[in-house]
Image 1 (cartoon, rainbow, N blue to C red):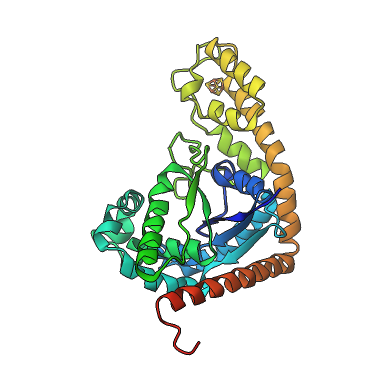
Image 2 (image 1 turned 45 degrees about the vertical axis):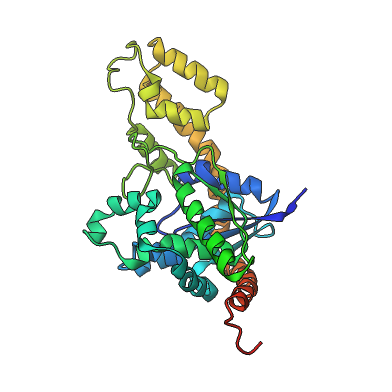
Length: 336
Ligand code: SF4
């Protein structure tokens, strides 16, 4: 039965098509949660601009790509409201109000922001933009605008939720109990490693399998995945713990098959090429229904746009009500 006392908010920055890291890390969970809670998903185009301000075309193009990915994995628009962040001006308004409740030093200390700034040295040099530093404030506006109370995140995102909770507490202590502190739900598989063994899977790293990849693309990528470097011949004893093919078998193959794959590898009874081919088949099997749904929606883009527009209208209605309550509490309701 659906729990109507809690509302889920999740989202993605539309900077590229979604990959299997997103699929195992969050999308599967969202599909499950939409049956349990009222769910909202934000396509965070404004947030995407904080580190892509010089490439608006990329953000614009990927709004629909991400939307296609959502629909193709089974996000059901009858259960989940999908909306575009920039089309909810109330979020920008709330961001301004909340920016008074956070210090620069606190944002600079936020571990998630700190790590991301360090990773974006090339873009920001030695001085980060006001917009990027402040994106946790904008995220607090996202969450509270639609009254999100449960936020599924990976461990590395927890500081952002804590930052939002602090803003909510500060707001309530000054203006009265209007906002609800969101709770984080920790996602188990939040981070899936790349084909090269990198802790992060991403477009810029070139180590991702996309949900929309073709059979040929999947094949090419898996064939170049990192395996046990000490294994030269088939009968060398292998170590599946350092092999990305074994890692992905764990995600795409049946548990008993993965167990015997690892045992055979350790005993030198399995060839890496055959092992990769088996994985390719299993990935294709898992992604085929997703790609078929994607194809359907690609051929019916007018339906995709309709869903997106309706979701955005619904989210905006909620955000307008919230903002009204917030402005009243802040004594900004001059003509009510
Ligand atoms: Fe990896 Fe399979 Fe080769 Fe073992 S046999 S190293 S698990 S690809």
